[in-house]
Image (cartoon, rainbow, N blue to C red; front, top):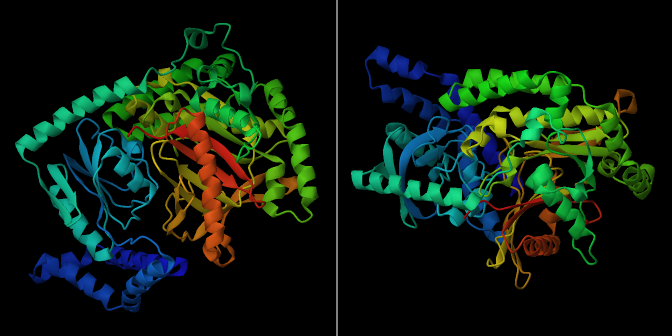
Length: 589
């Protein structure tokens, strides 16, 4: 199945390359010869269809269906993924991500996502997305499909290259207009909306905005003593176990909760030890360097540019803010304290891997390195999607205070990336209200990485996406990649596991140690994924065992977080130990 998926992606890439290679020449030639302009497009189509790759591709569809049937997988050749009807303005974007709908945030939106991968959050592009047309095939149990069902957002996909072309042509004729998307089990209709439909859609959007404001609650804003140099505006470091939402944000507080839960007897997971540089530290560091006013000016410029949709100005302001933060002098005593806090952890991990004897390269690299990531006050808001907004620095040498300092400043600087600025504004926050903390933790040695959607205590099922190597919690493994993770659906009542998809991503992210002469540490390297050696591809019992282990983690965390549906990210090491790296409430249903 993975080989067939890769072959299909190669054919699609070849078709796209041939089409790009012709450019506008066929249409221009048709006009010069006095024939229909569409004849130029027909010439390109004939060139593609006459090639060997296209002829081979005709064998792929039945072979993929046969492998899916043999493995008991869900049919992926569906157009109607999530049924329903929605009305909004039709816009196009390559991916659902912050900033993708810049300038289109005020009205309900039907989005044509040309390069949909299936791992997106609907709310990543803003709260006004009411319908989605995917320009690619999507699995009915992908993350985006699950989110769409939960939020009542109609979703249709294009399971074939011909379907994708027809969908793109239809969308092109209606871009910018109010349309109604009707997705049923019998098919999909996209057409111009009536006045009554538009009026109802606008009224519904107003009601939704009010409910979101009521449900999200109050964000933790920058305190006056942090902005103006009060006593609390100092640089400090605290144990991750002691992090609170008020001092370090919801992500850090949840990571601390994971550690406390992991300490309980019989807990089905472990969690990485760590520390946190809390709110107020960045402001204090900037103030010491007399750079606070310059940072505030860059942030205001970024906000202003984002509001008017001036992308070049936004990029320049964000680049200036990030460069300023990364150049700030980080307090040496704080960096030394962070490094010292991991001495015992590193010693224990190194002893466990026996200096590399019999241990995997990943185990050895992870044993003496750290991960730095951001926790911000935007994470405090219910219904927001923070995945992929901030940088994560992996492979930081635990013994180097200088490397720790650089990593902390780098992740803090990512709070002023273009994506982060747009994400804040979508949540009603200016950069002046931004608060950022840095989490530094031990590296979990990932053989596979997972993301769970627990569904909540009222849901009988849990969904798990699993990839080879380091994935969701450390890097956006799916960004720009084609293919599927292993997708498992687990019945929480009886432990039955259904395999919805086999992994077919062409590459994985693997942690590799760097030479000590180069400063030590480790880096993530993208390598070819060999599924012929992966138990989850070869053994049904391995998939059942993995699904049940992950379900136990999801159920435990649902109960810990008051029954709320959780998005849990983590990994499983080479010994089968589950590591929970972070958990957050699922976006509002």
